Length: 77
Image 1 (spheres, rainbow, N blue to C red):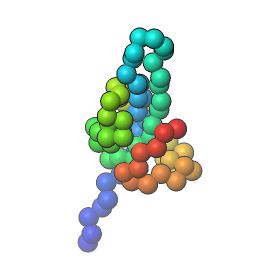
Image 2 (cartoon, rainbow, N blue to C red; image 1 turned 135 degrees about the vertical axis):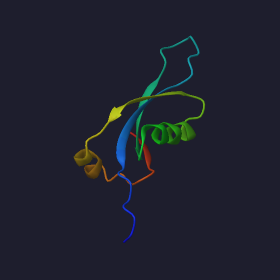
Image 3 (spheres, helix red, strand yellow; image 1 turned 45 degrees about the horizontal axis):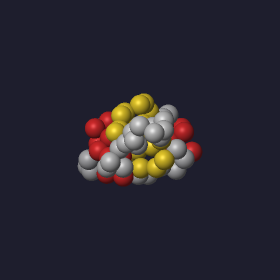
């Protein structure tokens, strides 16, 4: 019997650009399909290495399906 695939969850991760002091820091939110929050944060850090990242929540399975997110995918929302 084949092993069961681990459940993928759509984690939302807030990314703030480096603050230069002259303007308000830019904030973007990414969604990452991963099996756990640490993997999701690491995937987003790979996309935006210079920025500060913070886990902010999850999307519902229904919304993740509507967005057609694939395992391991990172996308700005």
